[in-house]
Amino acid sequence: MKSNYVISINQLAAFSKATEAGKRRIIKQQKQPNKFMVAWYQLPKARIRKAIANNCDLEPILSGIEELKLRKPEKPRQVLDREVSLEALKRFVKIKLPHLLKDVPHEVIKKVETKSIIINGVEIIISPDVIYKLKLDGKTYVGAVKVHISKSNVFDNKQSRYISSLVYRYLKEVVIGEGEEVIEELCLSIDVFGEKVIQTPNNLPKAMTDIEILCEEVKSIWNVA
Image 1 (cartoon, rainbow, N blue to C red):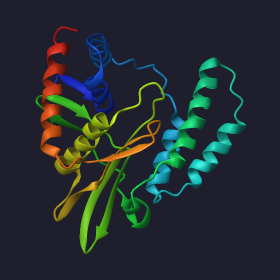
Image 2: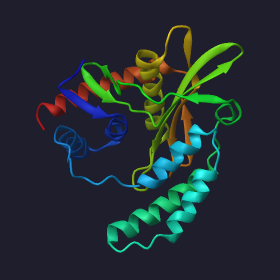
Image 3: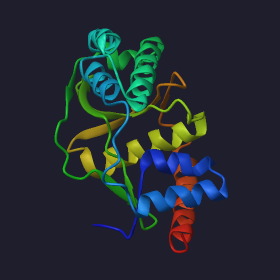
């Protein structure tokens, strides 16, 4: 099921706090994505995914730091990417991750065909960085992480709660199989430069109501942007 309105989860979080001009800019970018735009911070994103998948083993992070130190970038963009990537990995090391993620063995779910959910007619691309399955007290639980790396756009707690709420909803709608449950404590929004981990909020219905209102706003700006 597709929608005429499409926005990524991180852009929706950014949209929630943007000025009117900022909101229009986000919608224009979502309407006409730049196919040639080079993605930033590929190395830290990959290393953080690997670390989380391996029960928060920091070896991929530490070896990534060493690899970045040895790089000799030439272009200004490469210099900036290296600098911010290094800082991102160093900050990730300081983040306190839930003990369930570190101490309980989990299986990583590699392939999920559907990357998005639809709320109020808006397709929100969730595409978690890691989806995992673990057993606790004889029950099978599913959780997932969405990582945000941006030095200039750190998410506050409310924005991070929107992300973890959407991750929860996505797992519930798309990922879990029969007899499995979504574990709220492990539906996580990790903001690397904010050095914080936010799980699904206790007041999930309130967060989802806020998100539904945001989706209405996305549609109204989409139609005039």
